[in-house]
Length: 423
Image (cartoon, rainbow, N blue to C red; front, side, top):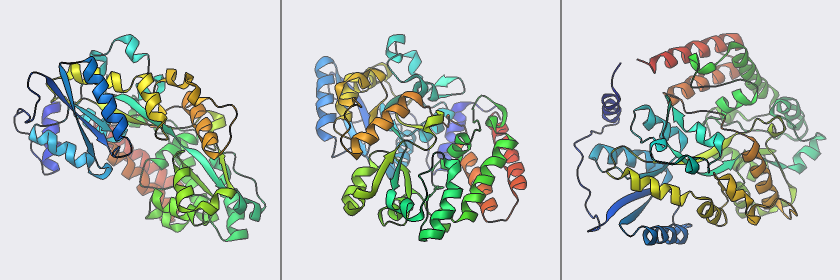
């Protein structure tokens, strides 16, 4: 078996990068240990919060200086890999779970359990904390969370004379009626993220990084592929799902051509800004499968690359910035939710006396975070697994292969990819 540093070197070379010897970063503050903190597109909306938090941390820790660097969402992966190749990786980085697990696969991230006291670990949502684990090791600390809620255009359902779906399994039947009565679509299950794999779990399947072939079963694979075939044949979803992503779903919903949108609570502000006339018809509900306890929590992580020379200070800063108090402050400024359950005891998160769509969405999101979980655990070779899932799902939708053929091929592909992670 190839050792992790060698694997990471190959990974970097494949992206056109290299990994020279570690070198000192310019700009360190004399007499202080400087840690560099990268976030993902939080400026300028959170400038005051981040800068004041850094100032508070530095006041408590006079021997440490924090340098903040905000990176555009689309650039984070490339810039972080470049910094690793140059030996100038940040000490703390804000990453999504997929990229975090990709680095963890190459043993490039510090294990927080080696630096945090048990009482500090106990502060975090246990379902989200346990999801940041790959090959028996933890690799990140959850920061802010979101949950997918259902946003409906009530008028489309009323025109079709149908009720809102209770589960995603109801969509093909309801969607056919909506299409026939109004010419509009009901759902847009995008393929630019992990939604097909999440729907596999929502429909009763299991995906686990501790099982052969990640736990994929033929029966559950057939159920998922049959479901997508029914969505497509019923006219519930537009053909553009095959080539366009979540943004197209947003565009269709805001133009009144899509009956439901599964997204985070922050989407309501975008709808109000871009399609204010739609707000009178909006109905906000929990995710269709929330009553069954099958809802997904999306988490943003903070990780510490192994290149750091200051892991103790880096984790000390992470514990500070993700503390219940600091996460509550952050959630008051932007529509996110904390990964620390104790934060939810703050009156700001009270769910009684709801007055509008925004408070309704937040209440549903809080409930789902309290009772839901992370549907997709960190998976080695995630990009290949996702590509295999999408390929067979789309082939079945287009009638190129049968449900049985697609499921058999998907199981075979996942088995090969799963075995390859140990080579």
